[in-house]
Length: 315
Ligand SMILES: *Cc1c(COP(=O)(O)O)cnc(C)c1O
Image (cartoon, rainbow, N blue to C red; front, side, top):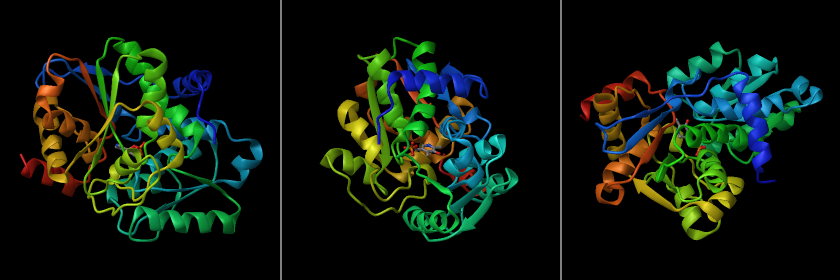
């Protein structure tokens, strides 16, 4: 697997721009002085992942498009693939862990993809998807071990550093690590002095622990925060993170719920748990970020009704 080059990212930008306008970067002084929010929550599928799916699907040859794709996901990667598959007229099957977020499941079906519920966790859904892809001769699309997905996601960070070239810090939530790896690739090229900080939940610390250990490790996956719920590290993003990531923090699920509430109250922004995790990391270390300009990447908005009620209740 090849780490995307800067020309790959520029090509991805041409592809993504043809379908998606840039998302806003807004100052959010009520969250903290010097804080900006990058609003990926306003994307058509409600999450940044739409960028990766578009770039991957656009790069498939005719034969691969005819055979179709299989993805596995707790929801947003699924919606990204389903959205791009519909756009390029590619058959698409998605494996989700049993009893998925109903909002995300309904969105995948509405986009015309086939939804298969299998396994209790993300990793069990992955095993089922591998099997399904083999049976049907379809292309299995990993959540992150895909250079085209990382290049597509990187277009968010090309925008970010154009919108604010002088950022001191970017905080990115991590599940598989595609987003944080993308941030690292762009920062290395455009903003070498900007710190890139990743955040995951202590209830599912596989990506964090893989980065600290310098090798891929498996960990319990117990979080209720869908976008951050992975049980093992992903090879390609971890290679990028090892080379460039400045720091990797853990916050707990309760701090993420609280941050969701603060996003609603002080930034008028509905974030799903994963999209509020950067704010949770920011609020955990106020002295560290004092006097610096900090971008919090609000990666997604797809909170279920139960999750929204819980976040408001936590406030
Ligand atoms: C997938 C996802 C993440 C984590 O991104 P990775 O690239 O898998 O690390 C964060 N937030 C949201 C809303 C997501 O859907």
